[in-house]
Amino acid sequence: MAKLYKQLFSQFGWTILLYGLGMGLLLVVLQTARYRFLILDHAQELYFGLIALLFTGLGIWAGRQLTARLAKPTKPLSGDALEQTLAKLGITPREYEVLQLIAQGLSNQEIAGRMFVSLNTIKTHTSNLFSKLDAQRRTQAVQKAQAIGLLSGTHPKV
Image (cartoon, rainbow, N blue to C red; front, side, top):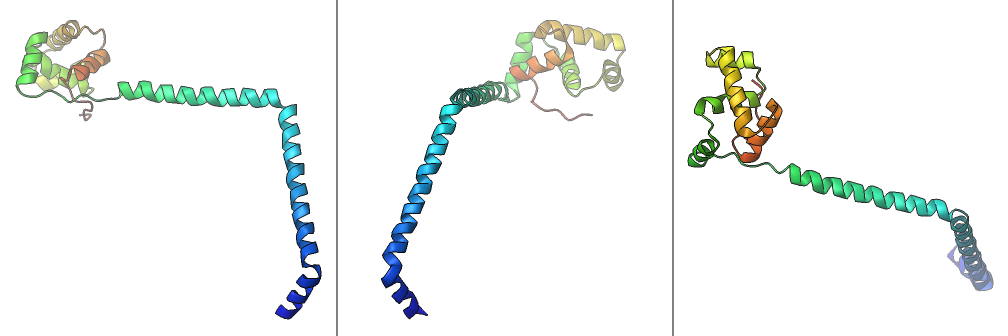
């Protein structure tokens, strides 16, 4: 069988090889021309598509940069640093306890029951916390306390 292939290649080998290379080259030229005409016919759509991809990538990059800055958790203060920060803000230990319970997602009624005080006392502590942390809502107070380092970034729901 190998002899037959050698004999056929010696007779027609170069012709078949050149014919195959010529056909392959012709196919490459035709495909290139086809894509070139496709690009010329649809240049505007291709440019708009490239610009859309560019701005999509830019938007994703900008979004990741902005959220990366916001998502950096601060370590909660402890010991003397915590006491100094609380004293600087004028937050009493009882108000700090209320703030921790607010961060856990408890309602005023639940906090009052847990601390064995009246609902009005909790409302007073909450109001004092809002003014000392310059917040209008419970969530805003928790966010500011986390940013200062009074609270850790996550609290288990109780």
